[in-house]
Length: 130
Image (tube, rainbow, N blue to C red):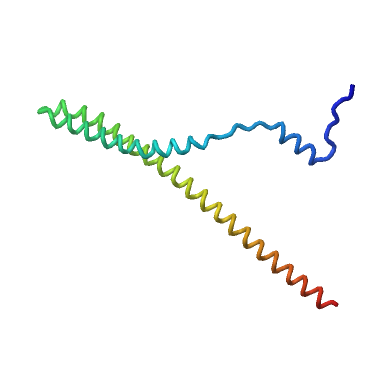
């Protein structure tokens, strides 16, 4: 019976470690769902504020109006704030990811131009020595 041999080089050990690593995959749908929730919550908040106002407008007594306006109005305002926060967070995240990817592409293009220029300088220097 032969025993399994352990990888000898650091590259082999790294490859074996990466193969054993189990990282849960994030769901891409979660971000889209939270972005849609960020759009829906402010609309729901405005509807809730309008319903509270409509109910409060139908009563004669201020003592009956205040609980409706406070509960519906404050909860509606809270929904608007949370929804706008979600929308801004995920919209800005998408924008910043695009911006970062664009920076990486531009940096790679610039690096390629520098490598080409250095190769031309090196070729000219070799011809100058000959």
